[in-house]
Image 1 (spheres, one colour):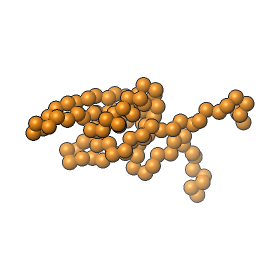
Image 2 (cartoon, helix red, strand yellow):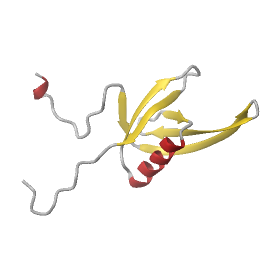
Image 3 (cartoon, helix red, strand yellow):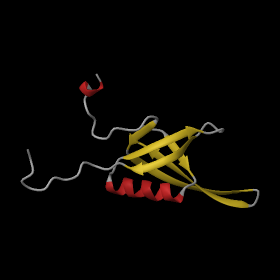
Image 4 (cartoon, one colour):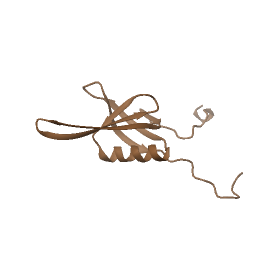
Length: 102
C-alpha cells in the first residue's frame, strides 16, 4: 500500500522537480524594438531553465545564496527550452527546540 512507501524529506508535486540552484544568468535583448530580460537558471540536475519572471529570478538568487532547495515546474516551449511555470522555495523541516528530540 501507499503507506508502506518510504517518506522523502520534501515530496514533490506531480510533474515538479526539487533541485538546488547552481547558477543564474541574465540575458538581455530586444525584439522588434521591445527590450526584454530573460533569466537562465541552472539547476543541480544539470539542465537550464528559462524565465522572464523577475520574481522567479529573485527567488532563485535567494535559494542559491542560502543553499535552499527549490521546487520547479517547467514546460518545454516551442523553441525546445525548459520554461519555468512555477518556482518556489522548499520549506525545510522546522528546527526543533532544545529538549524536543525524541
